[in-house]
Image (cartoon, rainbow, N blue to C red):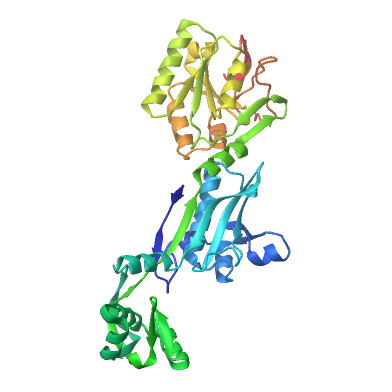
Length: 412
């Protein structure tokens, strides 16, 4: 479990970075839709907040950031939704609650909770520990606020509360610092003649008051808590399900489509044969990756190259480098992308930089295709078949080569 406790002024729940996610669209399942149409809606967060579907900007900000995080690690956005708590299941003190639910083989599973818990947590802690849990907001220029001026009947309060008299008067003084807070107490005393403050019953004859204006340079308040709560195990399991698929051409070949950012192993390095001169180059490339903190898998086994590709695909390795006989001639290697199975040829000393950029999100596979020539490979029954996604390098002078690995077109 991982939680964020974000404190916010209960009278101003705007978020300074809300504009950065305002246009982000989320799939929302509000309580009215749950009880009515039973259908979700896709809506921009700015609209969800402005219409009151999501209670405030800070809650909406964390919901959108959670969505962006899930998409970044590789979740399928079409299988994510936010479900609002019904009034019957929401805590009595909560202002609004939304659960991120992820669809898996178990159905829709709650994985992240987003709750506006109001001031409840700090108020209870403050009462039980008798320690003020207040935040201070300072103004650049003094402002006028409406307060309540109180006058206590100490004799009556002493008889009623004895040693707790100061606790009760302090609680009333704190409410009196803002008329909006004290108005509820004043209304109850006027109408009912009695009210409860922090568990103590106060009667109208114990306190008198009048509304006044006061210039202040700062205000103190008990913060509200916005709490996103992440179920790590559920998220990890859902990611595994969302990442798993089978090749259309061969259902026996399974793939985990981890994106480079979160894949445990970023790249695999293979020699096309077990020759010592090829293995030396493989070791050198592997060392380059390790020096750049890129986790690497080296497979020098005698299994067919296609079988080794499949082994890497099964554990989600996004890229594979193959050192072949052409590497001995011009120090170039092939770079294979897992999901498309398309390969390009580039210099062996470039691969660490290119893979590092992909892992950091600074370069996409499409960028690599534009920069390096695509090689068309046919490796037989156990290897990669020519992909329909292979693009032809236009206006480039190429030549066809045939070697033990297959047929290649490369720059002349």
